[in-house]
Image 1: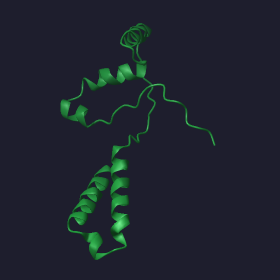
Image 2: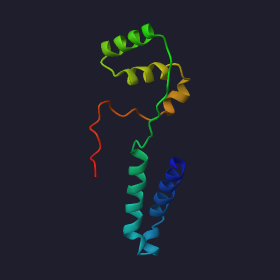
Image 3: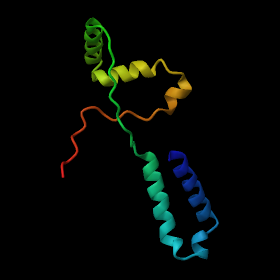
Image 4: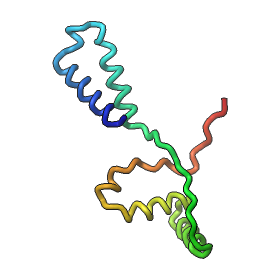
Length: 109
């Protein structure tokens, strides 16, 4: 989806450059709105979280938790950063940004 949105942004911006809105007046307001919506969607961090059952000895978990706390991170954030460091730089650079820890819960309907 991200690649499709990027392509839409390019097409919309190109359409604005050739004054597409002048040829089709109905598009004058639609083009900037579509461009803004696509750019907003590309900048959002829509991501799903997955839970994984990771088995390690208890003393390992204690050491992980202690180090995460010492670095001011949650255990999940610390483990993610440790794993990310093992990835090739090209792969790590393409990963989405991790959302901040302890986000407020979503409002219930």
